[in-house]
Length: 171
Image (cartoon, rainbow, N blue to C red):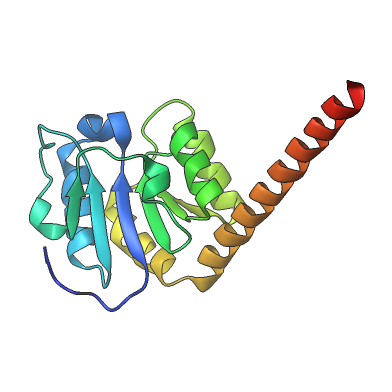
């Protein structure tokens, strides 16, 4: 798998940040199995030491550290832990998500992604491959995430412009 050429214009990024080493080995085994079955490039972002259950041969590329905004895009499906920061970066990039929550607010954000049509929530990691494959081929999911990002940027820009104009007028 490593080094193979793929035909799809989409890619999958597996990014769990500081939670990478807290995932159980069976989760990494499922992720490895999923990566092997992908028809597109896959990137895993994980630092040393490698977590148990992770086989790097399954991925097109490994990154030990990277600003997520540099790898998340509107043609990237991001598999992550559902943390607020990673979720926000996915939303602003127009990247649909598959969230595998483990603790705290991650369950809230994963459910929000699912309910809003911007991603999928996985509570049983054994279903990851099936859900991820459906998400990867869902044009509606990619379109919804991309539309959200465009609206997010436009709305944010409009708010910033109104703020600047109000400040100028107040001088």
